Length: 468
Image 1 (tube, rainbow, N blue to C red):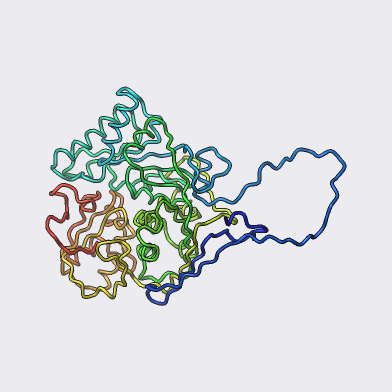
Image 2 (image 1 turned 60 degrees about the vertical axis):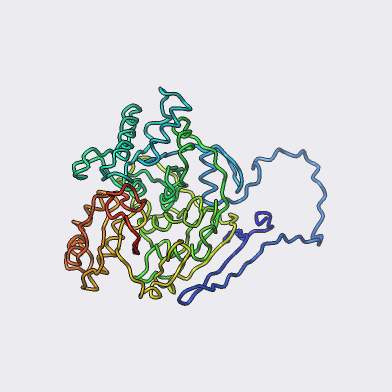
C-alpha cells in the first residue's frame, strides 16, 4: 500500500499507479508510465538508545493519521469519522437531496410505503425538487408526474420546489428553472465540502464546486427522504492533472472526451475522478461543470474540482449558508494519476455508439449529419451558446441542416437575448442564431436529450445522424 511508505515527501502525493499522458495531436497510442511504490526497509542499525528511567506520560497526539483525498475528507466529515479509506462503508449525512419529474414520483412512493402515508421528510429545506425532463408535452402521464411532485411539496411544505403550471408559456412561471443540474448551481444549492445526492446520473455535475455529488436510485432517495442519511462505500480516487494553456478552440467537453477515450467507459467504475492542474484552474464554473458532468460516462462515482476563488466568486449572492472547502492532503493516496499537456490537444468528438469512441473532429469532416442539437445539462449552459454563436459569427454562413437550440434554464434563455457576444459588435446569441438560420431558442428543459414523449421538441422519431 502506498500509504505505508516511510519518510513521505511533504510536497507530493502517494500514488499507486502514475500515468503520464503526453500527446502531439491525438493520443491514440499514449505512452503510459507506471511507477509502483514499494516500501523501503533499511536493516542498518543507526543508533541504540537506552530506555528512559522517568515515568512515561500518556500520548497526547492521538492516533497516527494518513492523508486523505478530497472525496475521502468530505465523506469523513459527513459520516463524523476522523479517518476514511477506500472501501469503507459509512452512514453519510446528506446536505442536499434533489429529485425531478422522472424519478420523483417513484421516490415519493417508496418513502410513503416504507415510512407511512403521513410521514414527514427529514428536513424540508434540504430537499430540492426540480421538474425538467418531460415538461412541454401533452402526454397526460408526463403531466401527471409534475402533479405528483406538486401535491407532495404542498403536503410536506418543501421550501425549494421549482414548479411549472402554465406549459404554454414558461416565462409565466417565475419559479420554474429548467435542467436540474444547471439550476442547482444557479440557485445556490451547490456548496464546497457538502454531500449532494440526486436521482439522476449526471448529479455528479455539482462536483465542480468541490463537493461530493453523485446519482442514486429511487429506493435510496426514498430512504434519504425519511432519514437524511445513506450508506455509501468510499471510492478510491483517480487523479487527473491537466496543465498547459488551453487553446481558444477547445472546451471542457474536449478535455473529458480525451480522458474517457484514455480510460474507457468503464475505466472509472465506482471511483472518484479528481481534476487538478493549471488548465483546470483557468476554467470558469460552467466549464468545470461540464468536466464533472461526464464522469459518469466513464463509470465514475463522482467527479470533483478543488474550490478556489473562481468558485467563491460564483457563489457570491447565491447562498447565505456557510460552507467549508476541503482539499486533498499532500500525502493522499491515489489509485492512479494521469497527466495531460492540454496545449497540444485538438478538438474531439465521440462517435457512435459510445463516449469512448474518440476521434479528432477533423477526421470526421466528411460525415453527413441530418440535424444539430445544442442543449442539455452538458451543452446547454450560457458558455456553450456563446461559443456556438462565435462559431456562427466567424463562419458568416447559414446552417445547412435544422439546428435546434434548447437553453438549460430560464436564466440561460434570458442570457441568449441579452448578453452581447464578444467581438460581435453588440449582437446577442439570439440575433446571431437567427441570422444563421437556426431554430428559435426553445423553452428551457432537458428537451430531446432523454427522448421523452413523441411531441417532445427536437425528438428523433425516425433514424437520423445528429451532432449533439
